[in-house]
Length: 181
Image 1 (tube, rainbow, N blue to C red):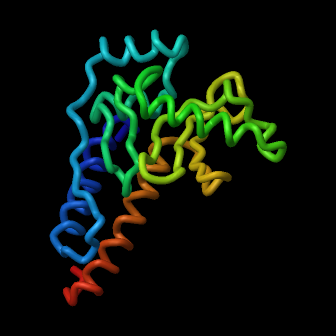
Image 2 (image 1 turned 90 degrees about the vertical axis):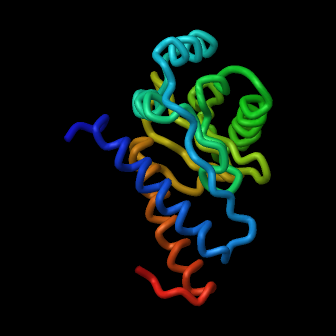
């Protein structure tokens, strides 16, 4: 199975987990959302043209399965092709990158090396792909004022979010008085 072949099952697993969490009713602020329909190659090419550079290869492949996902995790919006290089979510992501990079302890990441791929619309979370020619190109940074976590690939980040949602489901079922299955 190639990496590309994994996206359908990974996305399906996340959808199911989000549905199960929503069904418990235990988390009033939880939003059950679905990913957007897969991006066409022309949409991806247009996003890359606006950026003047190619997208992270892992995220680019994800877009061919899901063209973004609102409220992927709480208020975190995974960017779709229409978000790259334009719009309010993009500007917010870029402002978070600029703030993060302004601190001396983050000097190893100049703003030009961080491509926002997701931003939380209600708090300060940001997901960035480290871009070439930076030595960490391809790595995904989860930033909330500082680096919360790092992932070698976007797929690794996505898989970790599935694990977080599994924990959320167990907690939601416990608080709702339902037994885990």
